[in-house]
Image (tube, rainbow, N blue to C red):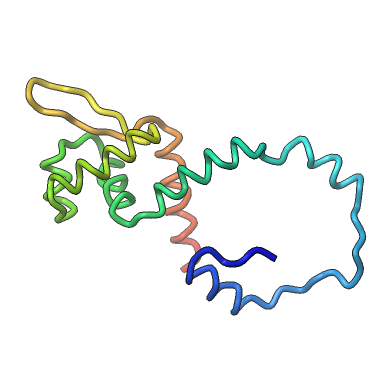
Length: 133
C-alpha cells in the first residue's frame, strides 16, 4: 500500500473504513475492456502536474478572479490582497502550465483564463463543492 503523501491524505485514510474483497479474483473481461481507457503514465503525469499547480489556494483565488474576465496584475493584487510580485510569480506558474494567457495593451498586460477547459474545470469543481454542503 502506498504511503499517504500529505497529512490530509493520512487523515482521510485513517477515517476511511472501506470494505475489501475477501478473495483475490481478477475479472479479466472488466480489466480488458477498461485497459484501453485508463490514462497513460505520461498523461497521468501531466494531469498530476496541473492539479498540483491548482492545489495552491492563492492560485485558485487568482483563477477565481480571472473567471469573470481579464485583469491586470495590479487589479489581481488588489483583489487578492497579495503583492504584485507574488501575483506575478503565481501567474508565471499558471502561464507555464498554459492555464492563463495574456495580452499587451500599451504598457499594460492583461491576464485571462487560457481557454474554456480551465473554466469548465473550475466551474465543475465549484458546483460539486456546493452540492456537497
